[in-house]
Image (tube, rainbow, N blue to C red; front, side, top):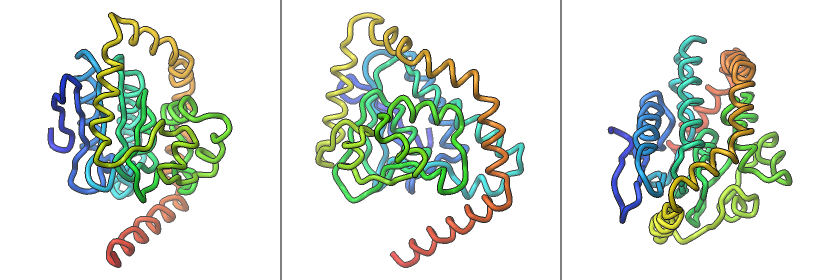
Length: 255
């Protein structure tokens, strides 16, 4: 695979996002992540999902989205929904090792993990969809609702707050913050421990725990889908997205 590597690490399946940039969820990356989920779902033991460099994932590739008509955006949305669902319900234990910025769709992908570790550092974890004027797709909303405690849910979802790693841990978005040099080893050890669960106990219990969320995903997907498409193709939202992308480019030029 081009931007997603799958390898064995001490009996644990290690899946690494590595596009050489910000690990944005482009059409290509979404396809590779879904293929990876399908492939690893047929294996045994624990799985670690991580990124590279300064990014776990910067989220949806807004530059690519901006070139699409409604039908094209719908195709990207379907890819996002299917990919997130497959990682969320993966029958094997999934540990996400957040190595750097995890923004919007990148943060949601991180939250799909059953156990979430983060490296200490000056980077942000959070959801910016509301700030951009975009409602949450159904699968994304269910992943975040399931993983986020009621005390922080409004700050995470409605206020779009971005958290440093320690604050993300306090909010329950990640379970532990560790030194960057220890992140991968700690994640592999956690995945190995979870992967030693006998028989089908883990898979069956996880399926039961997620049943209510999965039911809502299926029941409300159409409604969320149309709201998302209406918002993302609205001229005001498109204008705001273009301004955001220009601001990001300007910061990169100054760096």
